[in-house]
Image 1 (cartoon, rainbow, N blue to C red):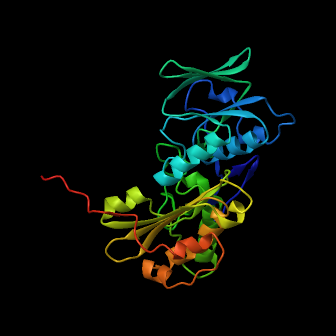
Image 2 (image 1 turned 90 degrees about the vertical axis):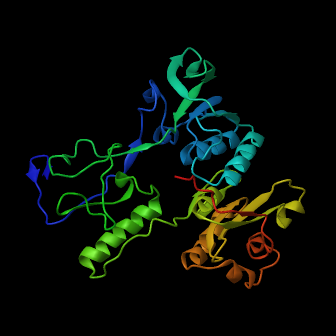
Image 3 (image 1 turned 60 degrees about the vertical axis):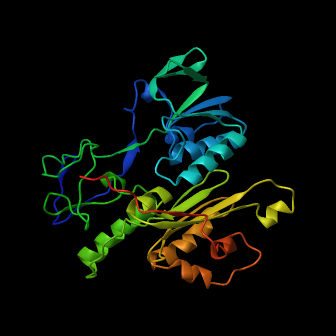
Length: 337
């Protein structure tokens, strides 16, 4: 590897260059701020157009709306946070709207232009959105450009990510890759776990692999949400599933007259009773789901939850007090051949 005028050699090379904001989703996107520049702002804009509907988009939209900025969130899907459980997505959309954020979803984005008033977003249906500032939160791309990976025989996918196996080995002998540059599960704890697994395997004498199937994640909006495991739709596609839900006003805020609600869901295998998914939106959701992720990873069943005594009065106790399923999903009908 060439580093200036120096040439470095090693029996192992670990690529961990991460990712960067993508700027190719639509023309003019490079004109907008990214999350990097947004954190350097000295003065808040009166209005902000956020392009995207993922983690970064909804988190910054929620934060800036709380600081008094009039925010418009523009995204292509029907609801923000594609890939999350539908019940969480719809409730988050309602919460963002209640926070004063204008939701401009369900329409593709055509081009971003700089205007006299700031920025103008052209959408494919002919509609136009305007704001004093714009934030590009359309996604990120792996940092693989300019590294000479092709010359080293490292295979990339169509998004420019390094393709790796279960042990983070690339297609080139002696080259591994971890984190966002592989575009597997782009979360900081996952990158740390992949790096630790590489070190344990190659230097610690303890062959280790990271299980990417049940990765807990949280979105720090107001209210926050968190999830681990299968969504209801994903579980239903696999076979029979029992869905348990709770929707309530937490006691500690209800006493103060707050109308804030919490929603919880357990997705359970309809045959084995194993808990396949845990989802929550509401106060302390990330803290609660982090703990329950241990139970899900350990293979806990709904019966295990049922015989666990509640800590009262807490919001988390609702997860062990769900007795009857809200609905039971049948096995999907397969098309005849």
